[in-house]
Amino acid sequence: MDLDPRQGLFGISVAAELTGVNAQMLRTYEARGLIDPHRTEGGTRRYSQHDIARVDRITSLLADGLNIAGIAQVLALEAEVARLQERLDQHG
Image 1 (tube, rainbow, N blue to C red):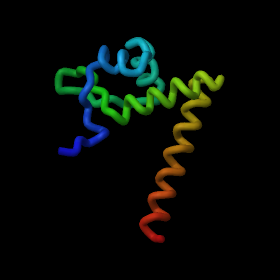
Image 2: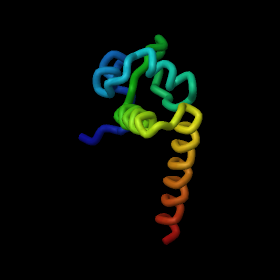
Image 3: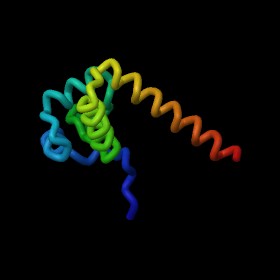
């Protein structure tokens, strides 16, 4: 059985443990638009494997000296490159 890497599986405490980032910072990343965890009907955050990998990427960029605004730019550019690569793959 293959799981969708974007399916919300982990609560905030588990996501914090998996990433080494405290829950408050996860909330900050969400508020800044860097991550977008799934919300249950009751409003509980559920983090996916994709979210966990994205937090790991954010942590890496922070360690490289980027600030949150710079990280947002890098992530947007990486998403655009992936989108363009997908288009090339479809037409190539």
